[in-house]
Image (tube, rainbow, N blue to C red; front, side, top):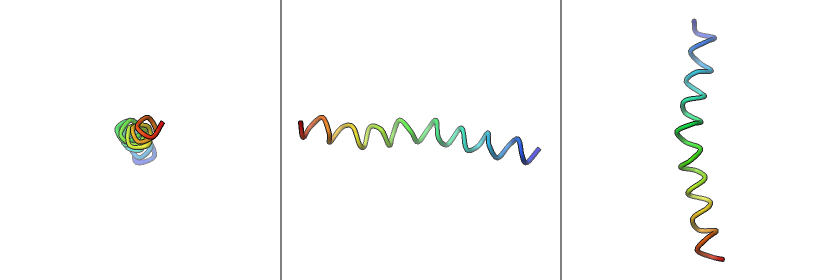
Length: 33
């Protein structure tokens, strides 16, 4: 169960955090260009 739930939590965190990180990096890049 733990081996299944831990990767699931990581996937959820990545799916939630990735767009936020992408926005944080992408927005200044658009503004500077």
